[in-house]
Image 1: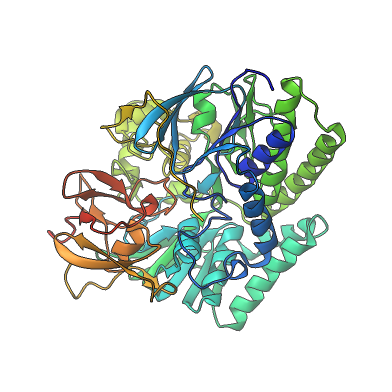
Image 2: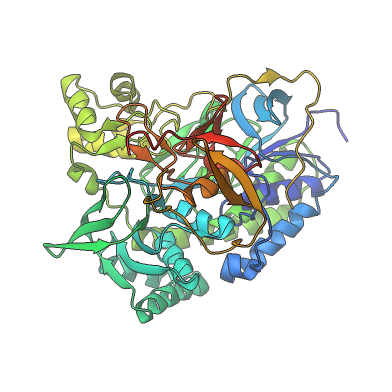
Length: 465
Length: 101
């Protein structure tokens, strides 16, 4: 064992777990840092306490994958260092600042695996800040991890594979699903034919969700426009246009999202070069087929590096760990690495077909009403952004932030940067990539002001379960 | 929190789990073992906070620690992100959401 510092793995979802596993197998002892109290990431998130449901109840058809990942992580006991409920808030030159157990600690690392995951991508619509409107991912977390429904009569709206999955999960849990409102036209679903030979299971499962929702009387509407959420102080209904007609439904909870967006702040702080991705309409960190970034010793895996889903995340996590081993001059399985890359290429083709079946409604950006809040944190409206862009001749998002405060709040643009770029592009008539990307700033998430710098190793929290 | 404001979240599981006592804007409240602070509050109320600028009510959004829209305060001024904070017995939470309701 060398005296070099240990590798640092950020995130304990499917990518981070498989990365840690391959590093351990290669003879290293990684430090795994994760914000959650237990491993699994968002998709395989664990409950805080048992609640009478089986893991099959929680993870459905993905139960085997969830159980295997949780078991793999449990088997790391004594072979890795694991800091749950820990926030990595700053990175530079091989040093990370991490808040854990009430103190901030400075950690040197040699090899950094970023497996930071994703959150829902959203475009603002009227009423999206009303209590009772959650993201699709948030609606799923409430049900899966907390055993709580976001309402008694709920509507799911937006796009992406999660739309039908979450609606189906709520229906199965006995919650009345009033409607599924799909931004994509019905014709977009023809792209699923291309996905069928690549992964029949995933396509047939999605088809079954839709069929079962219909069978239970859930209204499924496609190609919806003019989506808005209504209510005084909390959501009480949803309205939309369909074939030129205004439609309206009463509900007391909404799950909304337009597929996913990668969590890239740490890659930015690590100095990684970015490229514009046409499919995701987002700036993503550059990486090679193995997951190496443009910065030596920094590796990118999972949805945080580009949306590809949980199966790809597992393989990408293992693949970057093999690259890290290779780069440190350690033995690794070359055939395995090549096999993982081939599987990742297949899943990438599948993902392209899925994204085409659930296209992002970019044209909604131009239609966002001036009075609609664009930035939830700083309460900046779409109108303010358009006015700033026009008055100061701004086409770039960091300048827009300086002038309008959009993206300057606590979420650091996680919820509004993509939307702001879309609104800016629509207002200036330029392509979205011309808007650039919001630069990440430390701390990447709010940290308590009263933290002390830990001189001694802090007493670390025990992992849950 | 007045009686006519129905809670935002509806419990499906853990209904009989051990009660955890806390206070919400000074009033005694109960959550259940395994609750996050967000679930505990929104199972009793319909918002978590009011915004700094317009004062409109908010009740979180992403429930995974990303959107930062669910921060609440304790009576001693400590700020807590409700969706990622497990409920602890005796927490004294201030939302001030009742003031303009």
